[in-house]
Length: 86
Picture (cartoon, rainbow, N blue to C red):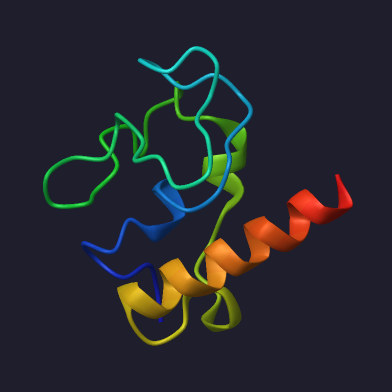
C-alpha cells in the first residue's frame, strides 16, 4: 500500500522542527502544515523545497493504521511519547 490520498495525518500530528516554506520555524505537533491543501495533499510533494524529514517519511501500516483517524491517533501518541524522552 502507498500513502493514503487525502489523509494528511503526517502533516498535522508530528512536530516538524525544520523550516517549511511559509513556516520558517517549522510547526508544532497538532498544527496543520500551511502546505497541506484543502484535499489534505502536500503542495510541496515532489518539490525540492519540501523538508528532508517530510521526504523521508513513507507509508508504514504500523504508523498509518487503516484510516486517517487511526493515523492521527498513532502519530499523536508517538509524538507525546517522544516529548517525554526529549
